[in-house]
Length: 264
Image (cartoon, one colour):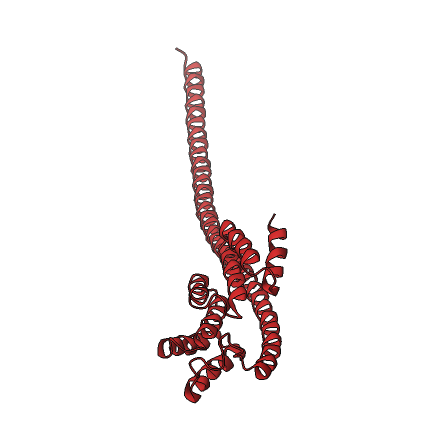
């Protein structure tokens, strides 16, 4: 091969080898750049996932806090409803007691008015205003004083204390001419404190011991009132019917007829 041609061939081969090395170097740089970009994307993805995890954790905490607040609010509302219901029950109970107290006061005024009239009549005729006669089992001064003390407590509105006073009087003086009246007031005091069953017992004791007592008709009406409060309508109706037959001319019988008319 001629020398010039050989030199040209070597030069061409050298150029080709240089170009190949340059191309290989360029390819490695691109690969490294691609790897760097891929790592950056991966890091960005990992960071984004970490942020999402943190945000999700914070969101869960917020939801738990909100749920606890809701539970607390529900509890407060339930307590508030309970307090409102209790207040309504207390108000209803108070209104019933006021109505019973007013009814009792009205009955007491009527009784005291009729008692004053009977006392005046008794003074003129020699009869006892408590249902006996002036000559039967005279009442001692201490006995009368104890009865009057219990009655004064009753009139003051302390019905619980008056029950003790009348019960002690009846226990100490069971044969006293004032015992039926003490039973009557004891029953009324028990009615005022909603002790209806005990009141019925004492009103019936009065009727058994002194069926012709001036308080007998009122005692029977009071039994019916207690039975009405106990929701025993059938027994109340029977008592009122017996009242109108046994004491037809009494004011209590008139009140009994009015109540019977309302119950029908």
